[in-house]
Amino acid sequence: MDRKRFVALVGAMAIVAAACGGGGSPKPSFNVPTSVGDGEGALSVLAWPGYVENGGTDPAVNWTKPFEDATGCKVTVQVFGTSDEAFSLFSTNPGKYDVISASGDASLRLVRAGYVQPVNTDLVPNYADIFPSLKNKPYNTVDGVSYGIPHGRGSNLLMSRSDQVSPAPSSWTTMFDPASPYAGKVSVYDAPIYIADAAVVLMSTKPELKITNPYALDDTQFAAVVDLLKQQKPLVGQYWVDYTKQMDAFRAGDAVIGTTWEVIANLLKAETPAVPVEIVKPVEGATGWSDTWMINSKTENINCAYKFLDHIVSPAVNAQIAEWFGEAPANAKACQNTADPGFCETYHASDETFWKDVWYWQTPEANCVDGRTEVKCKDFNAWVKAWTEIKG
View 1 (cartoon, one colour):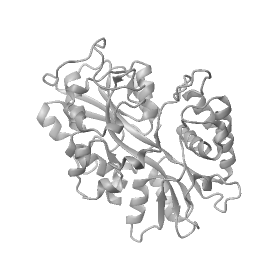
View 2 (cartoon, rainbow, N blue to C red):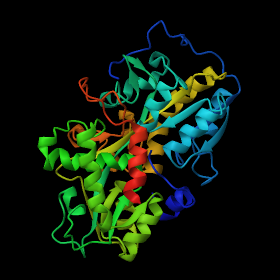
View 3 (cartoon, rainbow, N blue to C red):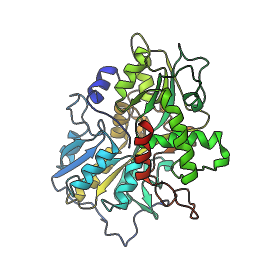
View 4 (tube, one colour):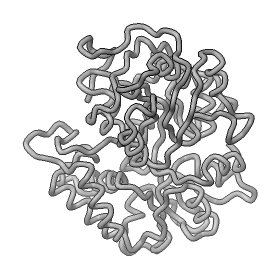
């Protein structure tokens, strides 16, 4: 994706990702469809920018019209900039949006609140080709019941200016060292879910805390993570929500090291002249995202909704979205349909070894998501409050 298209896509938006087990089709006790009939004629979609392109951003980029022509389902799209914004829009407008693309720290909140319904994956033929490692995850499956269709995934990475940061960093601790020579030039992802990034660091540097899941933090563990983030605060020169702003900071040298996404580094390297940046998934592992298409529990356009879910994760369309947005596709067959033959290798689409230590965003809950029952963990509200205090 070149910079012109990229800026057209995200220039006016702020992207903040805000966000059990088992699998198969929903249990019969749930009143879910057993077949898909004719479309109702309309579908309202709430989505991350770049996921449902209809030619409005670039006339040549349109995977919505072919769906409309094939199904008769006229699509209207509302984009959002953060997961919290998406949750607010979805919850305060019951039934308005038929489907939503939800990140892992929003999806479980939608399920718990009853805003989305189980999905009969048998009615989504392309579900069969979704990478198995994205199915039946805590953020899209509850009590063995699937609540959506995986869409794509990405990892948060450590980026540095190779002409100003030496030696090349291999650990997140470089961003947390009080004596860092890069003080004031650290670029940090601005969302409560970033607390999990610090938890990943402590999983490695303070094993005595016994953190086994960065989204399951009891009182002691959470206090240690918050302390680490407060220690980092004087080093931070930028909290970014719009990743064009992070590009600007690295281009100007105002930021020389920080947490980033692979697409940002690739775009900076592709500029003329190229910005000398390097990325690495640090030795401690990383957080990341895996988005899910979900259906409103109150939708009156259920047939259009199922047709859309199957269309949006079909090999050709999933490939278009992945390349346009800059993430690994969820459909394994999408890799045969990318314009860039090397795209899936660049984004580690089928490299399961790469994803083994990537902790996909997940809604923190009081009932510890790591399975502990003898203690309570800090829930999402506590994370939001702490993040506000950390930033000051």
